[in-house]
Length: 604
Image (cartoon, rainbow, N blue to C red; front, side, top):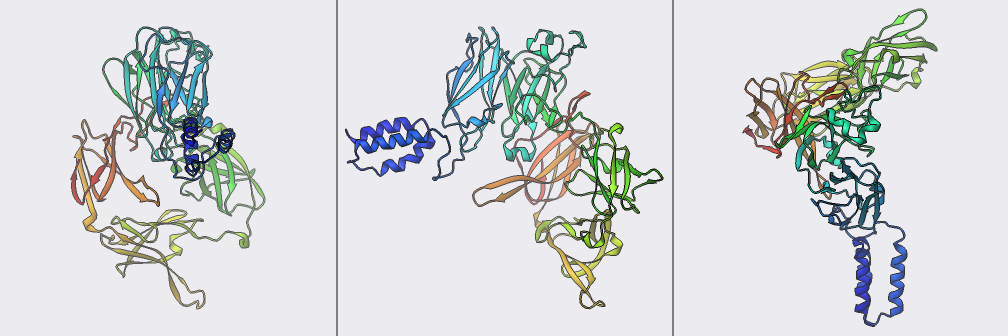
């Protein structure tokens, strides 16, 4: 028998997996025309044995392409389908069995459990319980599913079908304001729709979620942290998406990051956002917009108190708190101690309070009377105290005070005029005990030092530095050898932006008014050895006038992302709404394309 016949048989087998095919083509190319039947049989046996453990093959170019669905046994938009759900999806490569949890959603919910079974490049989807008759279903495959190289599906895939002789034809589009970190991690939120009103009485799947303390007529508002949604879909990498096959009616629409893949909002650990409420779905097309944020309904509590130094005591709360709202003290059986100051380190949610004259080996009771977080949630005073024993740290064991961070960092270019230098220390410092010298274009200038908080200083020049300047900051300290001499220790050197690189932006927001806030975020482009990465950098905000006009000045030329919103509560930030009490997030809008600002004036 000719070698070509064996090659054709072997290729037919290898088509089941593009990964295995790539790995073994090199072996086949070395076979000569005299290769024996016995040797070919040995190769086939080896391949079959290797199939027992499915792993990506080593060698060759790295596969970065997402898997794609190339076929399905259930025709999209089909009617009169069987109530026995059983279909197979064909992918263009093998998929990872470990990625199947939460990878497929079906709307509306079904009585049975949705079963997934992967076999190479095929995914079987079925249920042991029958579907409802005369019902339109939407099956969504999310980007949770991945190939053997950990590449997720590029965008959600939907199949619409009906067990009756018609399809529900309504469709809604949605857009979620994605955080930059979610885009990088390819972690995209789901959008869920919950029915509102008396129609809920006819939804059998809601039976186990109903509040037994309420009569059915009163149970008309969804309990989104308890029940599963009637419809659910996922956004794409830009935060956009759509859901088809829906029924007309009133809905509560919530977007959330389904971290545990249970298709249910866990508010204590998942960020979420509420859209217009109630949302009426009808023939009129309307785009739903969501912003994601912390909607945690659990209590704000004091969790622990620990010692940082001989006067620094760290208070650990369950959430970030607003420092100025904090009212805490130490108490013993004899007296009460109030803090002399406080601060919070960068990227830490725990405040540090400063207490003077703490007594060694003494037991104190830490008590907080009031605190609130950035969303206005107040401290649960029933869980706002903790015991703490103070142990004085010997001076020879104390960590020395040093600078932990400097902004701008050394060697940075294109810093905007007037940007102060920020010094962050690991322990409290006093501006009065330190001496600095500041140079602008090698000329010594007047230096102004501001105590931002107990551990940070802000340093600027008087007058403020302008464009095209080279800045150098030095700490003046005594020489370690000759006590009467002083030396300079260079802390930071950077350059301000060239005047020719500065840009401005002015424009008008449609339907904008004095409550409209425009947010501009710089797009930072980093060139890595094998790829180019985009991320969001510095942020600017501008308040519109009564006609919706806005203006930004002193911007570096480059690429930007623009977004605007109605600041209804006046806190200066885009809020995501709340679930208890139920409240919609603030409305927002954004152009799809990036803005490219040239030097000089730009018009939006």
